[in-house]
Amino acid sequence: MFFLAGRSSPEEDLHLVPEQYLPTLVATADCSKTSGYPNWNAWVGSAVSPHAVSAKPNSREDQVCVEGTGPLPGFARLCEFTCGYGYCTPGACHCTKLGDQVDRPTWEGIDAFPAAGKTSDYQGLCQNACNWGYCPSVYCDTTQHPTVVATFSPFLPGTCTRGEAMSTSPYFDDLCAFSCAHGFCPIAVCYCSAQGALDLLEPTSASGARTVDGAPEDHGLCAFACARGHCP
Image 1 (cartoon, rainbow, N blue to C red):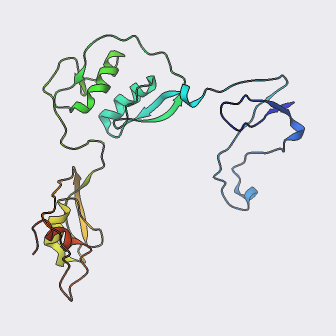
Image 2 (image 1 turned 120 degrees about the vertical axis):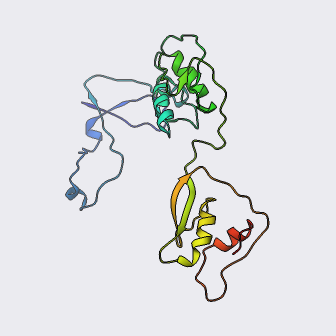
Image 3 (image 1 turned 90 degrees about the vertical axis):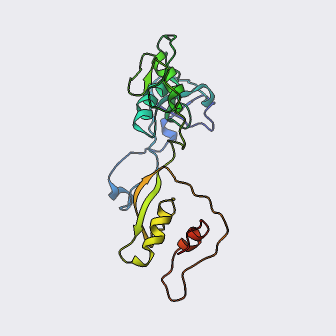
């Protein structure tokens, strides 16, 4: 009986070695076998064959995306479809699995566009998905609508758009309301009550302002607000 031997690089052929040269390893979920500690190492299996085997795996360069998803419901649905056929555009989608290119559906040769009210970020995904036979009307359409350009990236995480002072820090009610509305909401003194697209307010001057002597630590609120013209 022979076991598959390891290889130093993915491009090398697999070879077989007699089993007497390999230690016997048994995979187990029993922590008592490892002094009570879980083993987080990746489990590696092996296969046996009474015959000689030679195989060469595909190189990384020959593989494409065969599975993926997106950060938002609309993009997730489209990405889960198109990534399966090797079209997994960065930003809107992220690939979760690589493999051999699968046969794509027949290209239908239609012009597809984002649905009414959807941003131009959907353009490439709709064009590919619709031509491969998947064209959800809530996100895509074969009728062109006025272009909607996002004022912020829909792929960025939400930032704070509203907040207030923590109950233990009522002294900062005004500053927290102002700063949290523009994305700066230090958790030591403020509570963020809503998230969304960043309402960016650029500073108009440099500021090293801080609370007056004897007042609680402001955690940067005074410097942030005063640099933007709000300095109570």
